Length: 580
Ligand SMILES: Cc1ncc(C[n+]2csc(CCOP(=O)(O)OP(=O)(O)O)c2C)c(N)n1
Ligand SMILES: [Mg+2]
Image 1 (cartoon, rainbow, N blue to C red):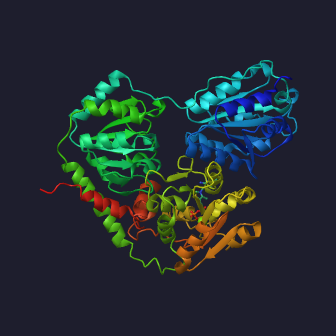
Image 2: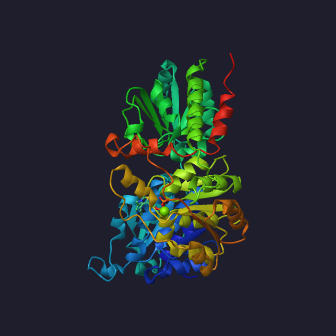
Image 3: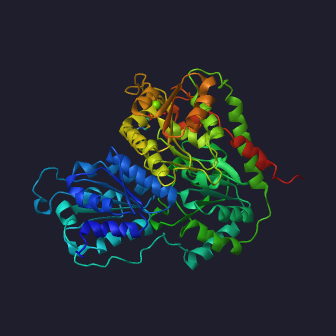
């Protein structure tokens, strides 16, 4: 039996690490890798149209399945195209190994045809970026790349010159015990002791959760119950924390709603749980703040801390809850729950426009119908832009649904390619891409990938013929909108011409039936909804000059929109308040 090549060993290790598919576009320098994939029955090559979509898809698959995923690009421009999707995956803490094929090793450093330096280029969007220039580096470099991606939750990049990829690797054995999950991190005893003291001293505790609270729903609820704490969340914490939450006070941040802001400012102890929430103006500076994060480098980088705790949220709370004294005074919690319900009631009252008849179609109406009609375990991928606002306010999480977007990196064009990665591992699950027309058209070529693989992805396109989020930003900044309009495009016709099912809707009465038609279609489908580009208006009393920044401006503006089913949740939580 001949010895394995570097590429074969690499593919073999990826398979051992649980990688089921590699997203990418082929190229000469990548041939040994794609050929090794072709010959393996355990891993599939997913042929996308743009490498950026490959990285977005790999990142999404990792976020949905929790497994390591992979993408690849050929030398120079091929792998360069991966970069934006890799930034997104890395910043979303999605474990992804990217294989960046490289020019022939003997030509590196000579400004050769297509020459870039992928090992340098990808440093900023990875935990590990190394080049294999000698077959002796195998299988260790692949092993380190895999374990780093999984163990530290992010991207690893292996740069691999085409000639080296095809060389025989001297060491035959590649079976090895690989790390399969990130570690459970328990905080140090000293921090835990101090945390217990701080919690016991406090009278009014508020918890604020981010995506680090994923899989810690029960622990957060048990702790909130023990210390009678309102629980707010950041956008990335919403899908994990808002459901089945009798302590819910809503979301803070640019798209925020409810009483999270008040609860964070009126407490005397704020505990940040697994959140790298970026907006300083929303964080208080005159209450005690404790931050718990699995990444010590995140501690204190957004606000002054009284205590930083390096540990994962679930484990920290499992250690903490039994050790803190039970608080019996619910007054702060109840006041915040009432404020939350009131804040939502006001929004609902303000949102009086008769949306079912409003033309052009109000995007919030589309989002609320979408929330009604989609499955209880649907995956939503959400484009950066106004779709973020609609998803944050109308898509109701329940612990089984997933909502992913480019929530940390904030890139456009993520939703449709992410839907590819969300759908491939499970074709039975409903996957809905909430796309903007700007975002969709940016990587539109990969709609063809959806069709090519017969993926039953549903694209719901909020087609407002504009880059409307930026329109709004310009307005807030007191600038006349410029460069934000597009001519009307019939995306449903494009979808049909490409071989998918396409439905265009411009009458609000047809939204529900159009959506049903698309959701019920057994295959790729796109609903092109012609929506109002001016869905959110700036309240007349607010001018650009009066605002301290876009952050605060937006928090005020979005309050003019609706909040969907959240009002029912808030009302039902009020029922938990004991009657005197
Ligand atoms: C790759 C990229 N380019 C530009 C931006 C700046 N940007 C943020 S949202 C947005 C508009 C998005 O337009 P569209 O997808 O049509 O959504 P809409 O806001 O109109 O609903 C732009 C240009 C970005 N975030 N990412
Ligand atoms: Mg748009």
